[in-house]
Image (cartoon, rainbow, N blue to C red; front, side, top):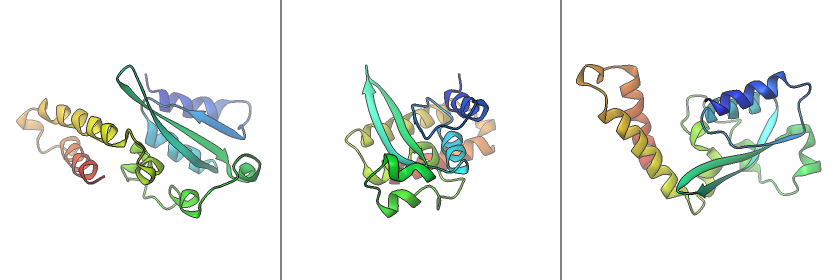
Length: 147
């Protein structure tokens, strides 16, 4: 199930936008983050959590106009990291704040993302080697390796 997409759709359809959201998307992270920024939220915190060998992302997004009420210490770089990020950046999926902060699980998280993409590449036939999807996976692996 596309939890990130579902979360986005629930927020959009809800009776009203809340002051803040604490979310833990399983996929669709880029789309959810882009949606929140478009709806004038600041993503002020991202964390990685490991449970039973599985890594999870969680994020806190606060409505821009309500930031002073909920967040007391935001650095300028945290405020602007997503607003200045190109829409095609892999950091929308990975977590730009995570990339900035590099928490203890960061290396394990990146290695897992590389591994999953490499498995997908390995399972593609030679006929698919020239497709956009194949090229995108190769590009993402290269980008992840430098993170």
